[in-house]
Amino acid sequence: MKKRIMFMAFAILSMGLIISCDKDETEVEQEITSADMSKIKTAVESGDWKITDYSDAGSNETINYEGFNFTFNNDGTLGATDGSTSVSGAWSLKSTDNDELDFNIFFTTPDIFEELADDWEIKKYSSSKIELIDVSTEDSSTDYLTFEKI
Image (cartoon, rainbow, N blue to C red; front, side, top):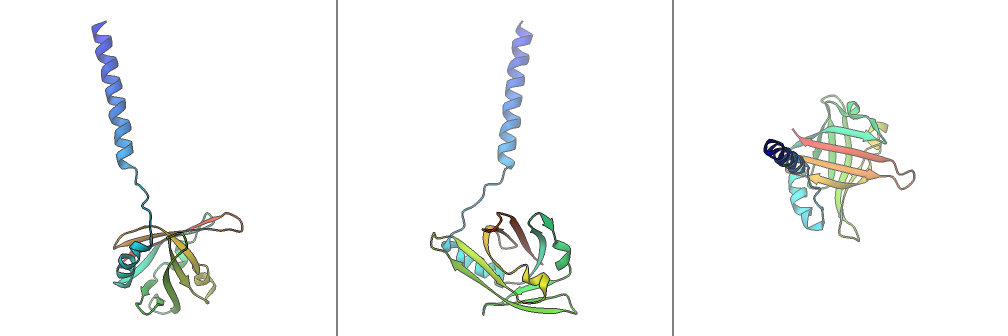
């Protein structure tokens, strides 16, 4: 009987540790507000970036941007080049009415770059990675875009 109680206590303790370890590994989403604007702007403008994930309504289209380096300039221009092809666009950060921050990307050509043109919501950011999300108001599809510093 004593062994059974000890075993039950050990099993309960072990389950508690396993559950608490799972909680520690879960990332907490940070709320991005206009107060983060200068940090994000500084990070984005320092160095070149590459797209490491682009998912358009569930379809992974990252390969379309493989080899392209993106440069976010402090004058609002945006350049992308793979060494032989150069594409010009624009970018901006804009505070919304509810104190959120939009990451705006503008390209008019070619078509694959037009797909990136949107007012993206910043999901997470660091000095070396920016994760963006866009939920379509038309069909509720979700697009994901991740840039990582090269």
